[in-house]
Image 1 (cartoon, rainbow, N blue to C red):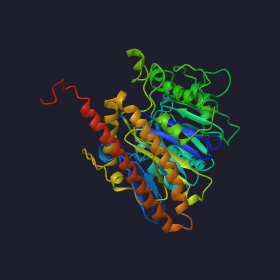
Image 2: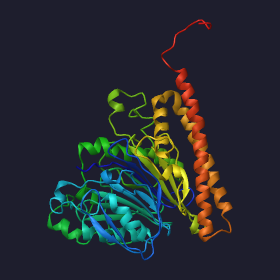
Image 3: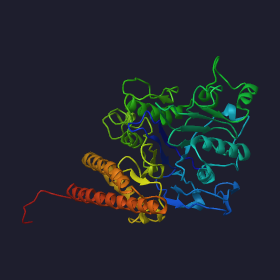
Image 4: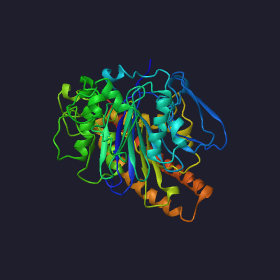
Length: 473
């Protein structure tokens, strides 16, 4: 039985961001709360044969002999849960995040069913990211693989480079559409078909599977009198969508466009919008960890019990990692790619900046155990988040202050590292950025230890096993 994950995606064009960077972001939500992950570097290969085989189905293929170096965030338990490299930035500063679980409707799947042994999420990044040269190239490359092998699940995939952002939705065994996010816009979605009207006369902003128009016409799949709305044709409008999916899109748009009034259960909330203000990476990080703050639907809020459990939060205890993949255009390309990685859940723990031009990750990230181990970043930050949540009213402000201070530090730290990289290139630069990444990890751990200690002391003092007594007793 396939264990479906359920993620949330945010994409921000370079003119919509505050600093002219492109940013793609996603929560990696899994089926179970405990799914340990690690952060590793897949090394470059030159003239070396490699074969990939899925642990989840019978998919396998030969990979090209030349591959770029790529960071990845795979599951520790390969044999039961597959590879799932999830997110990374290759040496040419092309970003990929996969996947957003997406569900096609029964009308379209009747005529193009899912392919049981096709290319699924577990092998997707490993089969694509090391071999592509732009975001557009990523869509085309993956599209050819889907045409050849088919897809066993509905999967949406994020691609970006310094200029373009593409969102690709694979919803049946072989059919898909990809849309470029306009530079001055953002987009947000969660677990349902998002792309709306497709302009087949505008290949600069749309790509699609071969024969998709004929497929829709032949099987009478377009319900609209006019237009070609991918969401209407291939998507779902279910009760689960109303309580699990559309509400997340509604809340992110509420954060970025507070002036717009919308219904959380509206199945036609726009996929792409222009934000009221330019978007920062902190805005994205807050959104990925959010749980409907300042609404009746906040599980920690003051709504009724029914309201507090009406909608699925964006940040979950099942969020194993969250990431913002950022490509800057104001610094040299060999130091422009930053992977902001949050291990353990984005609601209470920090997004640590890693320069993607690195040869290794910190040992606390790359050697995660399946068993509880506080030396592992994944277990450490997962535990930290559990402590904050256990006394939410008492600890949430402490946690907010901690995250705010770390974000201040991270912004200065990134500029400090770039300044120190001046004059360095090639292997020397890679070694420098690798070492500096690990210094950032150490500082983050140190600051987290301080708050951890304070919360433990406060927890002891909040014990119910106490009684008023004489100080001599």
